[in-house]
Image 1 (cartoon, rainbow, N blue to C red):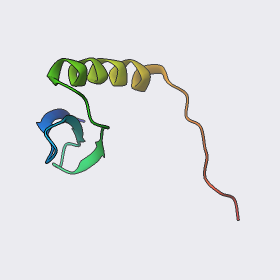
Image 2 (tube, helix red, strand yellow):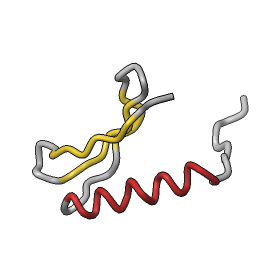
Image 3 (tube, rainbow, N blue to C red):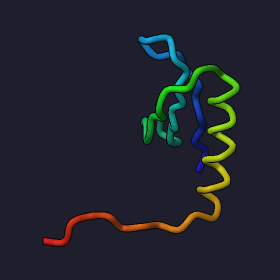
Length: 62
């Protein structure tokens, strides 16, 4: 599985991060960051959490 992160500037001038899968589909978009360094730190944090974080199910049960 070869996805990647993209750091980009949104329409308001803030930095954001996109998570793209191996097919080029956007899986997630971050909140706004004040600069590229903050966005990069968020990517490192995301990687740490994704590697060992638990999954919590918050869906409704009907």
